Image (cartoon, rainbow, N blue to C red; front, side):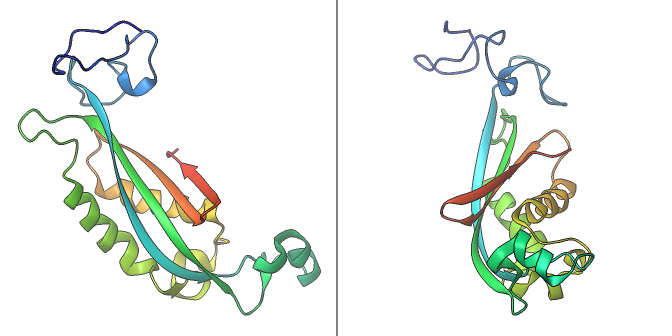
Length: 172
C-alpha cells in the first residue's frame, strides 16, 4: 500500500483508489466531491421484541420442522442490537459524515418507537404479512431509515438477534 495525497493529516495513510474497497473509490457515492475522504459512522441501538416464525401457507408440522422452537405459538423474544452504519464524504464545515445524534434520533423515532417492547407479528402491521425473521427485520429497518437519510449517504445495517447470530443488509 502506498499513501495517496489527500486531506488527511500527516502520518495517516489512505489506500490507493485502484486497490481499495469501493468506499474509497472516487465515484462510489453520489454527491461525493473528488478528494474528499469517505468515512463510515456507526450507531448501535437496542430493542426488545417478541415474534413467531410461522408461514400460514403451510401446516403446523411443516412450520415446526422448518422453524423449530421459533415456531412456538406463544411467541418468544429477543434482545436485539442494531448497528446503523452510514457512509459518505466528510463535510469540511462540520467534520461529520452525519451528526451521530441525528442518527440516534432517527433510530429512536423511526424504528425503536415502533419495534421496542412489541410483538412484531401482532403490533407491527408490516409483519402481519411478512415473516419476522432477522433477515426481514433488517430489510424493514433499512427501508424505514433509508427514506429518512440524505441520498448521498450509503446505509448498512447489522441486526444482532443473539450475541452469536446476526444478519447484514446494505440495500437493494
